[in-house]
Length: 504
Picture 1: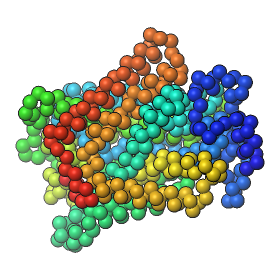
Picture 2: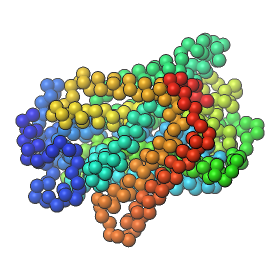
Picture 3: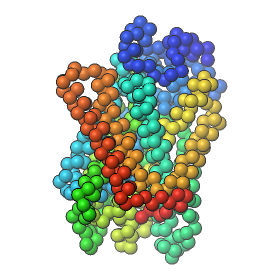
Picture 4: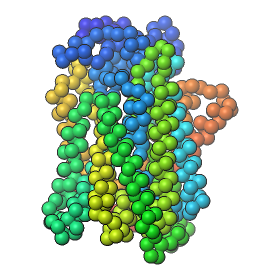
């Protein structure tokens, strides 16, 4: 600990996590990259100081060596690919046919392709913003936002959206995972023919899922769950492939139509188009964990992290595209405008239209794959919250969390998310509204942060692209929020507090 204190004194850091990038660049003599502490070398928590080349570059805070996101720097391209795949592909993609039902074949595919390219570009920006010119690493989205926009504005713009995209995603995973467990029980029991399909209530299914997720959540850091992410990515690819393949193989139900849903007036039609765009842009997730995943990669003076990270991004998003496009196209072809717009989308459509002519083993396998994927994805997004909780503790106590305290934090978070899932089982109905508020994290803020930090020449190509996309992202966010609020006002909200219902 004495060595660590010397580093803190020498660097003259405060407990604040971030300094402005502009001020850091002006302090050329005093803002050199400072060697910091590494992870514990033994169970007695002895720490030692290492060089920046061995550890992975300068850090914003010497306490980063104690925190779940940054305590392990032993990742590689493969581990980054697994984490990106598991965090980037998920059940939200099963709603894409709903968007095509409103937009039609041509505009639906065009909008999907544009959104895919746009979000891939913003990931490229984040990957190259991870390391500053001075060698400092920004291993958290919030840190980068505070550096680009200033401490107060950055916190205001990014803190709540990042926390919601992490904790909110975990709550939705509990709702979906628990609901899928209920579907699995119904399938196995054959609607009561083989066993009592009501043996577990929806709340109890939520609890089963939560217990499984918290058991897996005892891995110490983000890098250590790479193999869990491999399992999650594999199951996601498997159930996506099974769903679109079965949808084509079973044929179209009678009365399938590709006409847009009928609307009472032009305002409803406009709101429907905006909601369809919202489904497409919100199908891509994971930007709030990109910097964290890159933070698990080692850095040396000769080898920067953006090259292996970008290789991981390229491979993972190629696979994601191979899952999303077939789901959207095959799902719309098979069911047209019959795909439910509720949680589950194609999963519910397949259960509704093909439950009686599809093997129970196949349906049960799909449900199991979905549950495993939800548990695996839970680990990545919950790690952001664990990191935040432990950051607050280490700042106050100036020491790493003991193992029992780390376990307590995770049990506490599991209990809170379970309570939120039971209390707000209709959270998925609010996803368009809340998703619209958090959309700038994916589509706008990376562009604006590039301008604030890299300072491209005004009216240059990069300046124009980032200003244009950043502004478009903010406008789209506002329009999606307005459309979601309009739909809630006109159609109402089924607020079933403390009464989770089956997926349907």
